[in-house]
Length: 119
Image (cartoon, rainbow, N blue to C red; front, top):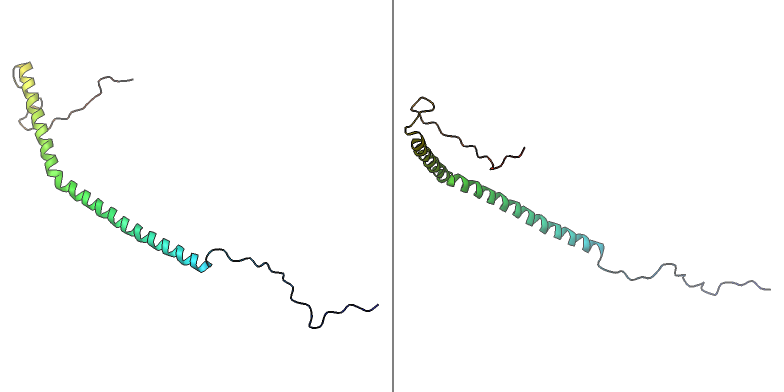
């Protein structure tokens, strides 16, 4: 019995790889896209932080400029309370009494307490 021999010219190549088409873009395209999105995000972050600093600076300057007005309002309220206190004292006692035995003005301190104290 004769031995089987390969055909003339040899066997054809054996396909051992799977021929699956690539899905999506090449990896370099994804990498470039990711870097562009990150660059845009950092750009927006940078400008947002700058805007927040500017708003904070504007807020501080606004408070500094309104401070004399707030102080004048506080002084008017203190004077109103002081004169009302003096009038109430004169009405109750009949004369003004000096608590501190001096003519120097002492700013009164008020302590606001709740109507009902819970123990």
